[in-house]
Amino acid sequence: MEACVRATVFFYLADEFALEFDDETALNLIFFYDNLDKETFNKHKDNWVLIYKQKVKKYETSEYMNKELEDLEQEMPGAIYLPVSKLRLDNLMKSPLARIVSA
Image (cartoon, rainbow, N blue to C red; front, side, top):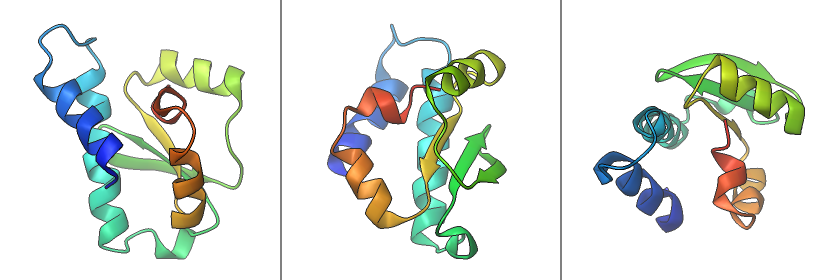
């Protein structure tokens, strides 16, 4: 897990003024990186994974766009949608973190 993501997870879990679904986002990020390290997603390296309530909800072949992310935020507060590929994930980490956990 990247240092910036680790710091975000810690902040979401420790901040008493965090939004109600920030804990859910933090737990989903922990679940994602734990499974990434265990190579659980190896069969889906070219996909994006949607995680909600520490469960894989689905895999997709393309990135969600703004409207889809907004809809996802309404349907599943705290869900995360990330690429399984470490290279794509590293490239995504170079963009603002808000984009990563916007759902």
